[in-house]
Image 1 (cartoon, chains in turn yellow, purple):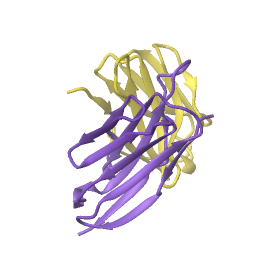
Image 2 (tube, each protein chain N blue to C red; image 1 turned 60 degrees about the horizontal axis):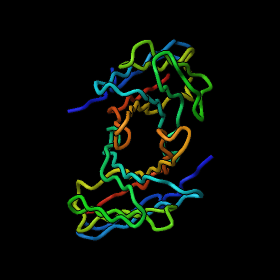
Image 3 (cartoon, rainbow over the protein chains, first blue to last red; image 1 turned 90 degrees about the vertical axis):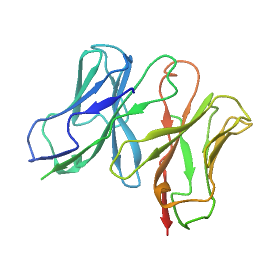
Length: 112
Length: 113
């Protein structure tokens, strides 16, 4: 069964900390995505990558960066966490012939 | 950019009732997808539609690709408590960046036993 795995289900971090959210997919997909989900706002795209070492800004990239050194791994980095980054973060991947995106189970991040 | 309007935003229904939700777009899509997100989980694909007018079922779920290619509908028959969650529509257009999906904001479904 194909999988997208996010390293943590729940995370609590302090304001100002550098935070790494990791995502790994086992489907050899080229495309990977990071979204944040907040009540009433739906899924908002932060960054995406269509190849190793390639990255593109989504709709809300401010305060975030990403890294894709290997095809299967896409990391989201909060350089200096702030309370307004408290949210559910979802990673997804897609590839040729894929019906759509396959999502991970999400990481619920709380910044205190 | 492209926008999807999904309605209703939320629904409270009695167990056993049928449910309808829809998405409309300002532009044409070549693919429509419907996802369900259980509480505390990531979205999971329910149904994919590839042709205008296509009607596809998955158990008690039926989805349709609108003839204008600018809308899609999802119906759930005889709802049960495990239908609770957020339902998202998503569309894909052709051309540059066609691997990207545009998502609706979701319909939150609550089922009263």
